[in-house]
Image: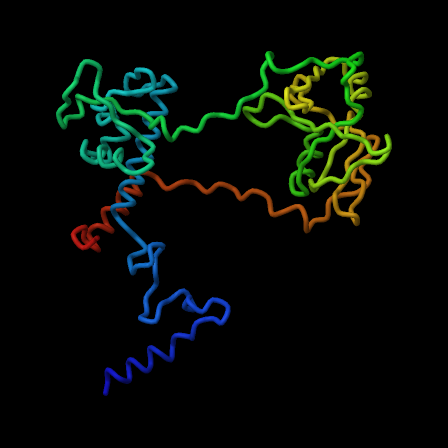
Length: 315
């Protein structure tokens, strides 16, 4: 009788499937209670093994970065480091990392790291002294090819292909930052600013745009105002420039700025701010970075969890 009451109570507490998604239980819970993980099986929300691998990966990334940058890390060889010396590094030894843990991490699918035998060793043993460690080449993302001097054409006021109007596109949230900085600036690591050419309809009417905010520049007029800025056309037909000495296209060179929404219209024209982006469209901005947890504190927390739940009970 007691079991029947419990079954009735558990059934009543769980709502029936939604009519919109009949195969999915409501409240994120199954009919048997308990939450489900991504693999649709019951499991813990915390895994000491996953946390341990995360700590090892973070420490390895730091040590290998020091090595690549030529700091006081282990001796590098073509972006590969002596695995034995990596294990002896302070950032690694403080965690008590063993070589078999490094091997397990490198054998994971899509691992960030890879091991290879040292030159001259054809049959390595299971010893760190026989291996080199580095970033897995298959997971390194190649940077986007920047235009080079071999595939760009310099533009001048006498160029036959000089476009009359170019445009730089941005978002409602980013435009106030661009305006406050005094102009369009190159981001860190960006070699060129990129502008689209604007084909005028009937020589006067602007074509429809898809960007939130379009910053238009009369290119011949901008070239006359600031002759120190070099302009180029890329092989794709876009107009590119490095900007001035600060990597910027000053707002004094802008013709006007237009918001895509009809109720916003012209935001900036002829050196004057005509309207501001509504506060509701500016976005919440980037959240400030929170200070990371110290390595010692993280290790202590992991060890306390291991004592509480016991590593032997983890699947």
